[in-house]
Length: 348
Image 1: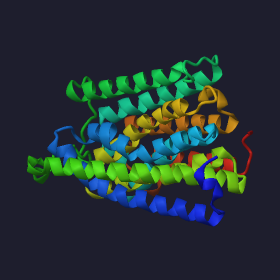
Image 2 (image 1 turned 90 degrees about the horizontal axis):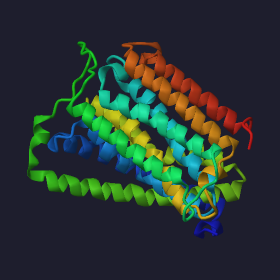
Image 3 (image 1 turned 180 degrees about the horizontal axis):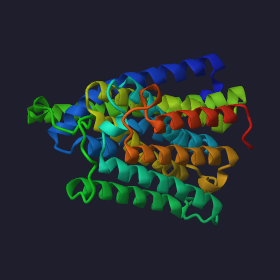
Image 4 (image 1 turned 90 degrees about the vertical axis):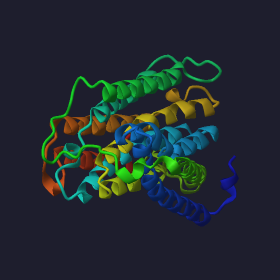
């Protein structure tokens, strides 16, 4: 039983909306601080977006998935994790629409983002492999959870090496916007203050994520909606709002590499939600509690990421609706996929 089980549907929905607004507000502030820290620390936008900002904006999703798993709702936990990745990939298309120049994937070419996108596809595939494999556990945790942590660490290392010793470079065009530090952000006298603000915002979105997760549990038990629909659509989108506002704000500030990096890097980190949820889930391996609907969301997310990766490689300048071919396909696949899920056409 969860403490929210005693709440009415109206109160639960109000908590859900209020927590989402807190996440939205904190995400706006976090984007501004992150751009300054990326320059002041010398990490660069792509690496900072993937390693720190992506992980910090993912805190609401982590807490929501762990909360669901701890309360015995594995499908809600997994669907929230992977549904957030799908939503955030689609958010990149929305951010691209706000960019008046060429296609965002062309202007923000970065080998680090290519590495992270490829690693994301690999990590999601590992989840499907674990679901189809033996039900091994150690202290209630499946070995694949440890593999996911190791794979994520490997991906960060490869991205860091690609930045420091690149053996492949994106061809620079007149429309390519290189990640150049803002001179005002190089002033290190306020570095400690910036880190303090960043940490406070991270704690704020984490607490809001816990409330979102609890509200999601209440919605499942009060409405009778499937865990996969509530997790993959409602809680996933709500906990992903920091990525949306951060991405759009970064585009408006001209930090295009940060905008792409926070989505792709954050998505790679989000796969670890499943590993965290596996630890919190005490009824066996969470991978083997996955049914057809979460599997569908995982497969859909692999497709979305693969299309985005192709767009980063192809680097089309312009297309329909001020986005490239990958943007059109990502948006179409996402809408069709969740329409099928909402209509109950994907098996339980």
